[in-house]
Length: 506
Image (tube, rainbow, N blue to C red):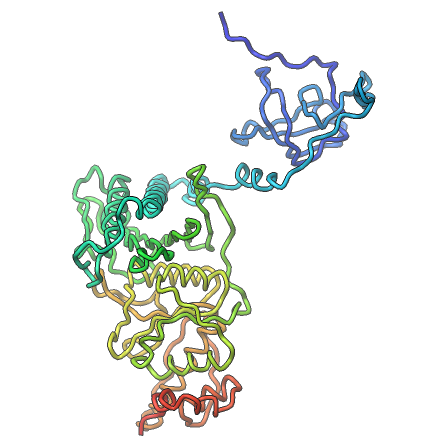
């Protein structure tokens, strides 16, 4: 016997369409005679659509099934039946009390439920953004899967006894935590099994991982830090994963080489990071804006939150840096930080790059991890920390710079890495603050040129910070920044040791 199916309601059972509104949730009978949950997406007053004036979208189904229907195919407690002429029938009267049957009262949970149903998922966004590139869609789905598995491992780390050191150091000399090893294994396996990667660079691996098997090899080279800020993991501070993606340039007939990934950040096609904190959030860019997604643990899906755009006015006055290294800094960086304190800036530093940059993107301000006398190249790695974060910052409307690096000012994205774990200085954030740091470097360089008596053209600036620097008389760095901020020079007299560090060379 064929399965029993619901029949389409009789044509006489019309409902009052005057109460139907766009966005209304109701039951609609499809052509197969079965009723489905649906949402009203349009309503027409045209005479041409008198028989089917309401367009509905069946929830959970593709938009290709959207259709125009009449009142005989709609059912909802909020809709009253209509008479044969299509006019509203008299409201149903309770036999006991003679009162109208009340409609459902909205609750505080309605917006929450509506967002979970209607929000765009990361999977949907990937399919749209990859524009038919199936290999890119496979790669991005492998990355989001890796982020979900790492997030789950971090949640269970305490009960599973996964806190603490693993007893060895990684390729860059950092102490390795147990979760570092687990996160690295997760990322490597997810990317290998995607079948679209040709070369992988991980912070935890001393050499690049080359996919030799032609059947599992693909066109993408991925650099990643599987667990950034893991030194904080034992005290439950937010950590994250960072990645950048290149498309290989060498012939597909042979395995990739490190030359396929040792390229400037301007060649990066996708970058992003996942932050594991009070919530798990994934922030990505395909080179056209920055999008933010949050993981709904009940659904196991990343749901779209918002486009990320830095405040145009620079946002909150926040500077983020490790002041424990301040005595090793260049004079312009030290001058800038001291001036921030005098101008009422707040200091915020987590010690996890993902957390500090994430806050900077959302609130504004500046994040600094500059070169110093001890680490002339800085401490943050180029391929899987500097490049992806710089691309995201610039795509969100901010600026990024290396500061004075190898004798010139430049963009982070234009650095040419010398090896897979190469480092570079990091200065990134809002235009308001980054441009001030670059001005100080220009002033410092100008003073040095005047002392040497050699005329040298001013150093280049990133496109987002190209401004005409005012001509200034030779002054000490402290006096220059005091004049620039409009602060009294005596503000620096309160810190004699710092003032001495800022004094120009004889």
